[in-house]
Structure formats: structure tokens, C-alpha cells
Image (cartoon, rainbow, N blue to C red; front, side, top):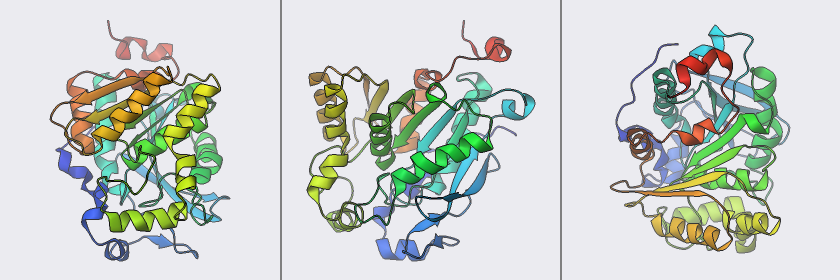
Length: 324
């Protein structure tokens, strides 16, 4: 597997799906498999030689679902070795469009020795599935990931199939999802990372980066137009519940200072401080709501600590990947 070079921050433009008419966008996605209930569970294959598209049967969905997986070179070179897994949750829109740049990003980081070799899984969470189980039952995105996708990954690949070997990270809607997954299932993930996350406010229809007409569609399709259900699933309420239970998950919250979601991230950060819940919080100058721009800023700062929170490096990798 050859390393590729990460390009500019425009490559994840698929996250900004709200800039196009919603219905037209869904109709123009070639190769998108539509299930009987109208949901799209199989995405087109990402245009990258670094990843493979996998189809598996999800009991929660009742049909086949797709995901993409990146395997480091060390996976093939060391057939007796098991590897930690990073689950990377996409933002709103056709998330597969961002997979090639993300695969390049992690492949380059591993090749340079910035992080240890790990498997990166890119689940398909529907263009606006919110990484949650819809109130209607028609979009069981969270159940698909937790109950079906993770077991499939652990059975199909040589993973560290336990909490110590799993991380979850996400961008925007995916950051919201990573927060939900990490706070709801602390026994499954060693740590979680929320990048440019939203929605973090308690009113889903409050101002944000998604225009109100699209927010109303999502509010109906995912949350059944029920603000109590939205609030029940919110990382805000989940953090309060975790703190009340005495849990101290390991996680980070990162946002660009030019991001329209800055204030809601600051408010969530202050909630965590009030709850005395330890976490890492960072605001990055000059970064808006652009996933690759934020990741490249973290790379420039040499901030790779989150990805080292999974299982310890095995001896065969010590010389290459441990920093002096």
C-alpha cells in the first residue's frame, strides 16, 4: 500500500450538503442503494486505493450496509499482529467523498512515525442520520454501528477486540456522534474525539450552520419533531448523566475559532468544567468549519496524542514509532 500526499482543505466539500437542495442531492448520488424504507445504506465506493469498501448484513437495519476500511502497511507485513481501530464518523452529506483525504492523512501520519499503525474504519451513517437511532425506527444508525458494524470489523480483521483497542472520532455531525458513542458506551471505547461538533445546543432548531428548512427535515426524520427526544440524545444530557454516575471518559473537544459552531462548543466545554469532567479543549485560530483544515492544523502543531490512547505499541514497532 503506497502512501499518498494530503491535498488542500477543499477535498471534504461533501460535508456541506446543505449548500445544495436536499432532494436533488439524494437523487443525484449514483450507485446509492435505497432500501425498502427509503434509506440509503450502501454508499458509492470511495475513490482511493488506500481503502476497501466492505458490505455486511446489519440485523438492526435488516439489510446490507457499507463501510470503508484503511489497513496500514504493517497489517500485511505482520500477519500475526493485532491492531487498534479508529472509527471515524463523517459529517452531514455524502461522507464517502471525504474518505480519500482522510485515508491519506492517516497513512502519511503512520508512514512518518507520528502515530502507531492502526486500522481506520469509516462507517456510512447516512447523509443526515445524526449517528442516532431515529425515533421512527427507520434509521437505526447507532444500533447498526454498535451492535453490527463493530462486531463485523472485529470478526473480519485482526483487531484488538476490546475497549483498549478502540477509538472513535468524528467531524461536525460525526463529532456529535462520537460524543454520543463515547458517553453512551464507555465500555467500548478507550477515548473519543469531537471535532467541529454540532449540534451541541439543547434546541435543535436554534441557529447553526444548517439552514432552517434542512434542520426541520432532519428534526422530523431523525427526532420525530420531538425536542424531548433530541435532548435525551444530546451529548449535553449524556455528559450530565455520565458525571452523575461518576464516569470520567477520556476525550477531547476541538473547534476552529472561525467556526459558526464555536459558541455551542464553548458552552459545552463550560458545562464539562462545571461537571468537573476532565477533557482536552482546544480552539484553533483561523479555522472555520473545514475538517481537513482543522486536521492539518493539528498536524502542524504535532498534536497526535489522541491516537496513541489505544493499546500500547507492540515491541516490533517500538524502534520505528516511539519518539525519543
